[in-house]
Amino acid sequence: MLNILLASRDETSMAALKAGLEENDMQTAWAESGRYVRSMLAERDFDLVVSGENPGDMIDLEFIKTIIGLKPMVNCAAVIERDRYVPCKQPR
Image (tube, rainbow, N blue to C red; front, side):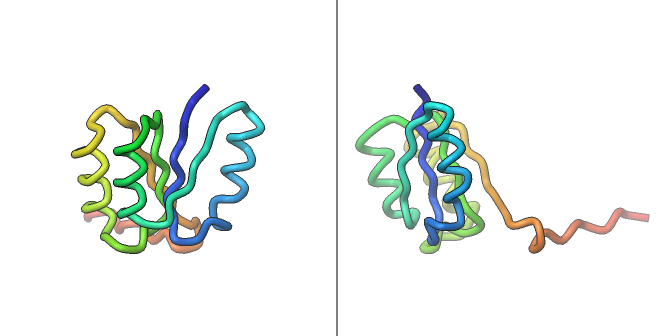
C-alpha cells in the first residue's frame, strides 16, 4: 500500500484526488502547511508528497527543499489549478 501525503491550505481542493487514491487502496494523510508536512515526514515514511499551489507558510521552492532535506528519496508533485496556469511565451 502506498502512503501519500497531501499538502494544501484547503483540504477540499484535493478532495477528489484523495477519494480517487483511497478508492485504489492507497493510504492518504493531509497537512495544512509546510510546518505540518515537516512534522509528519519526521514521524512516518511517505511514498509521495502532493502539494497544492501553495502550502501556506512557505514558498513552493522552499517547501520542496524542506521535503528533500528531510526525505531525499520521497517523490514530490505540485498541483496547480488549470485556469491559473499561464504558459510562457516562446522565444523568437
